[in-house]
Image (cartoon, rainbow, N blue to C red):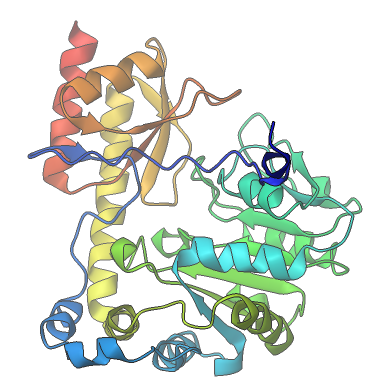
Length: 352
């Protein structure tokens, strides 16, 4: 082996959901919003002055930071914006998880957390969720170098009550606690009200789900001014110009159009609740989802067989061949028409 090959950093990368591109497919495997972004986003994109592309974007993403801060009623110095919440969380790992103590996160959760830990050489320990896939805050009352939890959790879709979140934060004030709220808009109480109470709390959010902006790659964090300042320093040491001009302008329009946001959010929630009933009629069991997806298993049929049958019909859902969840499927909520195609395909499969 050549000497230089010994020093190449080797990590097992995150595996995203399959991204097929077929006409008339039903894509329910990546938790994207089934509806388009705000019409105001469409307007700003159509009127975008391409001459701006010759200029560097604002390194502090000022216009978008201002809009996010106003919407969430926090100071602008409490907001950090990145290229999707993955970028934001990765930057938080790099900034805050620097002790030799292991960071903690659930054994069943967003599968990027262990990837970042391995990439940045951060020791970590996974804490098992219980038999109902729920997080017990008391399990995190051990020495650690930081904690990250998703609320609602993914892929289980389960909400952790605010009181339990606060219990976990209160017991870990010697380390940074990150609450990943990618799906909070679909019915979960946010921990944002705890920001001013706990200086070690960082909340992360995304425009990819409830604001229909996955393609724009916009994520943000809200925390104390001290935490945000530290993240900005790390960001500027790595890459100052991370977000492009169109994304900044589109993001401002998306967050300012609150009426449209609530309209499509409510549509998704209504479809989700109906889907719970329809799938139950077909013999599926699942968690009480508070997200834009369902986490389900069938009483009699193997999840992988269902996955392959649906794929043969150009209907895509998500499956993990991992312990404890290898007989579950994650089904993103689509339009009512897309969900009807799913139900019909499942009925056909189960009747066979």
